[in-house]
Every structure is written in structure tokens, then in C-alpha cells.
Length: 470
Image (cartoon, rainbow, N blue to C red; front, side, top):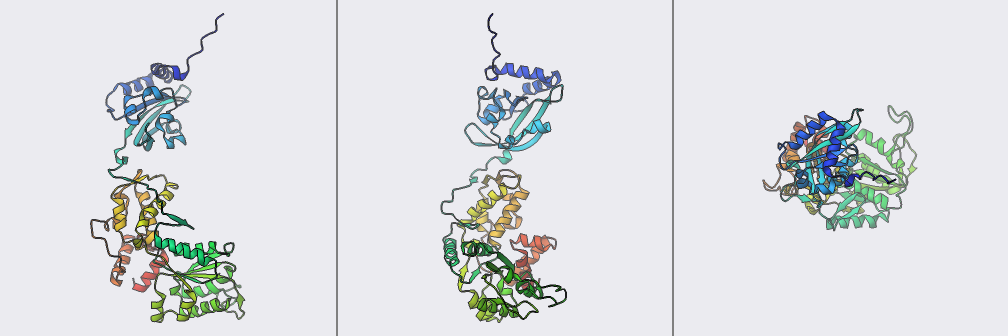
């Protein structure tokens, strides 16, 4: 007796046979609907139509699909659909198998030559008599809105970039600052970091801590401008029971809590004069006296202070102790503003983009050619923090793989190359006051949102309001 011939494998079957077998399996009504779509020319030459069976193998691959993705029908019919579409989002789960339909989903596929192909996907699932997934018909239309703009900028390779404790730069001045941090961290010298709001002063303080022998101890930070003077003394030095109304028990201050580690005093110029005297004693004698107490408590800490203003000017105005100035600035460290290191703007931009790519539904792969000139012309009063806020804004309001000019905040677009770039000079008090008022009005009086619009922290915004009487 002769051995029966085994049935041909899926790959050996002619695509017409696969298609007709699939159409019979999904029923006459659905077969008629599918056939009418295949026969109509309404989809146009740019439309890619293909059909998959219950195993998501391709049973029909239209001429439009060949043109759009570059794969010939003979290469993909009988193969899993992911071989032809190379859809990373689809790998996580088939939309039509789960939801039954897909209506205009934005996807980036990859053609036979590896190029990205932005498309809009429309699809409809079919079911058998038992309600199980029996396949589907899928339509891909080129997404003109997501297509690369002429001259679009993809992420370059930053060969001169140096990463250091959360900071990254290809600027020589920043590289020197990193080297100073490494050298000073091996000593116990007190460091005063000077830089505008948003330049990364706290990151430098953390780097000093983690490069030093104190890295296993605590790192604590306090913004001296964000706490009222009446509370700041207790926050820093602690208090004893009964020292004031509400002091129901002894409480250690930050100097004691940071014992064995590092205490970062941000905006140290805002310390009241009486607290400056107490801070001077801590630095000289390495002891603290809690509020209401009379017993000195020894502390083993390193103090790193920071300010955005000149302490020498504060001394000249009688607002800062000269002896404390010299105690704090044993090693002065200046951080340049972002507008002074324009080579870092693109580097930091892509760093923030990659961070947002990992957390949100949008993934940006390139920039419109007009974006970088706008960013380079901006003054960046909020520095690196402001740039991070700009990227977060762009991901919130924009869509698609290209970051466009329309994705940028309106106030930044107005400062671009269409107007002459503003000189890198300090704003007058009247101009600064106008900026604060305009930001508050735009934010409906909400301080937090107004600070974000200007790339400032809330304490910095509050300090400017206090100084300018806004």
C-alpha cells in the first residue's frame, strides 16, 4: 500500500489557495466584504492592504504593500506578519486580536531596507462561528504628518561628552568643574558653588558627597530661601522641649541628622544675620546648640553652600557676614549658565528626550530642522532645568516621532531666530518684574505653574517676588 502524500506546508501553498481557504473559514458574509475591499480601487496606489489568518500568517499582500514596505508578496505570504511589518509596538500584543479593530493608530514600521516608515493603521478582526479570532484585514496608509521633514535632525554621536554623577557636558568649563569636584572631594574643604538657578548646584553638591569618604553617610539639603526665618533656625540646629510653643519634645536639626555626611545649604545668601553667626560657630567649632538649649552637641559634617548671587556684593550691602564668606568659600566653584555653553544644548536636549521616551506614550526620534536654531537663540534664564521643562512640555502637547516647532512653548518660539537673540546680560529689575507678573498672569496666579514657565524652582520664584515686591 502506498504511503499518502503529506499536505503541503503553508510556505509551499500558492498564495491564491491560502487566501481562498481563509475566506472559506471566516464565512460568506465576511468573505464578500473582504473581496469587495480587495477589488475596489478606492484605496489608491499608496495604500498597503494585507490579510492574516488565525495564526497571524500573511495570506494576502497587496501591490501597495510591496511599494510601501519593499517586501515582495512571494517573500511574506505564508510568513508571520511581524516579519514584513517589523512593528515594535505590535510585538507587545496584536491590536486586532485583542480589541477587534484598530482605527488610525500611528505606528513606525521598518521597510525592507531598514528605513523607518510612519503609517496610520486601520484593521478589522474576523471571528469563526465559535467567536474565536480567525484572522483580520489590515490597511496601512502613509502618515504624511509623521514623515521626516526635509533636513530633519536625528540624534548625533556626542564624542566629547563627559558624564559625571547625573550631569553631562561637552563644555571645557564644565569638564574643569568636574575635575575640581573630584580633587576637592578627597579633602574636607568647605565648598561654595555659584551659579544661576537651574545650572545644577545641588547635583554638584551630591557629586562632592559621593566622591568623598563620606559617601556612606547621609546627604541632606535645605533651601534657605524656602523656609521662614522663624522656622529655619529650628530646622538647622534643632530645638529642646519647651523652647517655644509647640515644642513638645527634643528635636534634632539638620546639622545633627547629617552627622557623618554632607549638608547642602542652597541659597545661603538668604540666611538672616543672626543665623549666619550660628552657622559660623558650627564651621569653626564643629558643634551646634539647639534652640532653647545650652549644651553644645558635636557634629562631624561637611558643608557645601550654594548661591546664585555674589556674596561679596551681599557683604558690601551689609547683608552677609564677611567672616562667614571666607569660611564658606574655601573652594569657590562657578557653574556657567547654559547660554554660555551652547554646545551642550543639543546634548542635553537629547538626554531629556531619551528620558521622556522611556516614560510616555510618545517616542521622539528626530527634530524638525528649525528646532535647534530656536533653542540655541534662547537666553535660558532657567538654564538646564528650563530645558528639561521645555522637553516635558513638548512631549505633553505634541505627537509623532518628530519634535516640531509647534511642540515648543509659545514664549520660547517668540525668542527664536526670527528676532535678534537677546544679549546674555542680566535683566533689569523692571524687566524681571515684568517677567514675573506676565508668568503669574499666564498661569492664572498659580505660583508653581508660573515658576515652571520661567524654568525656576518655587523657592527661587518666591525669592524674586520678595525682592522685587511682586
